[in-house]
Image 1: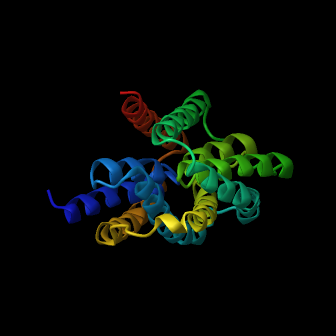
Image 2 (image 1 turned 180 degrees about the vertical axis):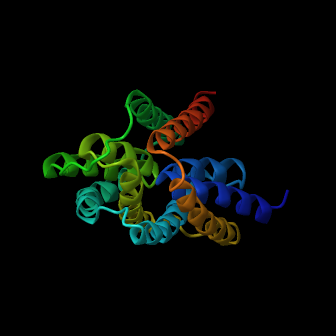
Length: 248
């Protein structure tokens, strides 16, 4: 199968995940770039940030039009995570690839387990506590920088569990956090962008953007608890695959 077809197919799946769940896109992007398109781990994490930044920003516009973005909370999360994302990007260059892969898998599995333990998302939005939101945002930023992911797979459960947003509002707000954190981490990884295969990245990103719009419409038709279950199962599957690959 040609690189173009693989890039389009993988991009479509990841865009659907981002548009529907507000996260999980970068969790899928890194393994897709490595195992389907032949990227090295360093190139894959950098390319992932490019794809997720552009796709998340596009999906954010659509969710904002639907009134599902809590700007104050999202900017607090993103602002607190910017510096940790940059520092994490610097630290990542000094860690072995197997350590990064294993850490990636463990963090994803923990986030999935947390969502599976939770009950349905609350029906009403509770006022966010600035301190808790800032602390969670800083942690998300650090994960973004170190693991080369947007952080949406942690942002959604944090916005639901820590802040108390409804699931759909958490999905939309997480896209704001993903966009800012990914862009900050990408700035620190600019030196690793040389030699990236843009012939694969461009169609990958284009397909992801188009699929994210369909994902947004799907999210409006699926209940909050159902989204949580789908999100958690997706994370567990990816975590298991990455952990096995790191250990073997």
